Image (cartoon, rainbow, N blue to C red):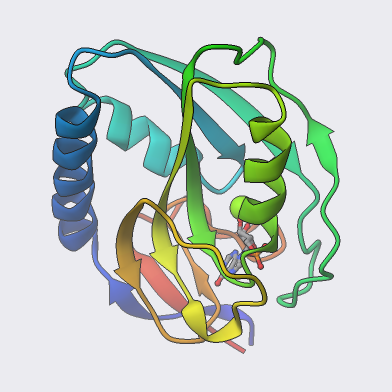
Length: 173
Ligand code: IMP
Ligand code: MG
């Protein structure tokens, strides 16, 4: 068990959604530049697809925070494992996340980055699992709302596996 099961969101649906999200982001920021902050490692594939639709000047950087390890449950504790390489003072920051579950990761990241005086800060997440939310936080841009299943593929892993799958699958547990 713990193998990828049926496809929940296929590559075509993902590609279309990424283009839609990019369209909104381009419109909202108009001629401003934006620093995309990818949350390692899951958001790497999403970020790479998203930035290729951007018509505004974009910079990218990455942060890594502690993850679930090999478990599919959140420990509720968040730590910075890798920080940004630059100051975000007076920059528009867009946090790019793969999936939002309890919301603890994004709450921590938003709080932490807010303290660094960016010009603005927004969040885009490809997936949202609202059923396990522990904090009152909403993404500014959202791809898909899904049920309380553990999913893999398109950057998302289970114990570092299955990130390379082009579609998003439910994990058979
Ligand atoms: P949160 O802090 O509970 O919102 O968890 C967010 C993080 O948990 C995401 O960045 C993912 O790395 C991981 N995560 C949550 N649900 C899943 C899932 O279904 N598949 C893969 N990773 C997940
Ligand atoms: Mg993640």
